[in-house]
Length: 450
Image (cartoon, rainbow, N blue to C red; front, side):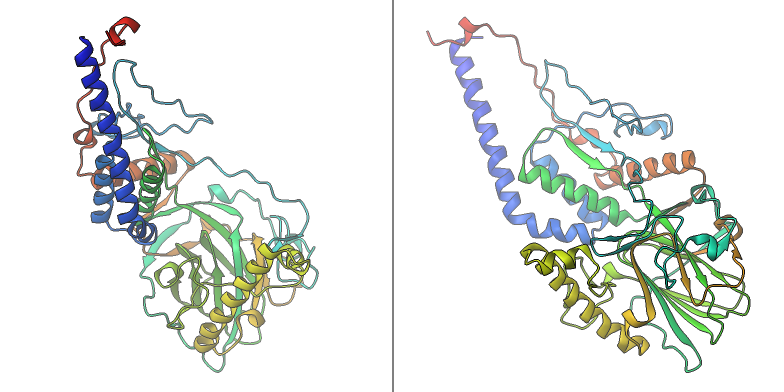
């Protein structure tokens, strides 16, 4: 290679780098707002657009071979999903320039909860063997239910049916002879053998990854796999005075509510308010069911919607919250947090009271984290626990609802993520891969000016 060719190649590389930086800056300024919106609600068309953005940012894709769990025709198009603790990094040959797009499986969560009931940041934390809703916060589940094995992650529901989400920001009005009782939860604790995934969630993961690559250009894009985890909660209803209108509220994860009733209890209606998927297993009886997905109406940060439709179940701040205690000591960060929760609850309670005629906090047992609730007095004898495997699951209609053993769920979740991402870029990731640039070895004397 001559000196003039070397200088020309160097200048060409500088121009390419400047063009990438300019492209990234332009895209950041033009698309930052649309990327955020995509995180909330992204269509398949928008996913394709975002994938194109990645290509425009001069990102080169090299894709390793798939695991055996995916179809053979994906072998040249999709990244490997490795469930081992440390995924082996894809490598590039030193004779080529390029980048990697990879699908990273989310690692299983570790149980770091305390072994006793304690105050949390935004509520009380009840470990798995304790129950919320009794007069004594430290009461154990054994006072209410017997034969709970704790092996809920392997309890596959007897049957699964879906129903559409409520899109009207309204709830069925309680009848005069019904009593409204509720549960308000931030995080459910029990594992389940259920997964619920939407294409929007996979698109959001892709949007966030591309947004990061625009803000901080780099050769590799890692898209976190959407695992569709659905947590479980047991709700034991012991109130026999009137038919119960049950309001099941949670802020974060998808939840299956395993509702169990004491003898003489009538559950007239169940209204679920959830951030993602919501499912319920009910005792026998003519119970009607509805569900609202809060993200259809409100964002995480929205505490005072202008239209009065606040469906996100903000809990009312309490003095025992760690955040409230820190706010009382003039910690500005926590003062702001408590103010946000207070505004959020006030807006939510206005909507709740408009729909149901009662204050949300007055009729709800609240917790930051819990696995079991009791609504009503302690039973004279513990109720026999009914596992999910002996119940019929009714769950909101998502694109992908899965049940099965852990191995099957892992395989299907990986394939669904891969299918959606492949469709998002038009079915062929290799079409986004520019030609490999071969770089010939060069000595120091060849690169010096003569």
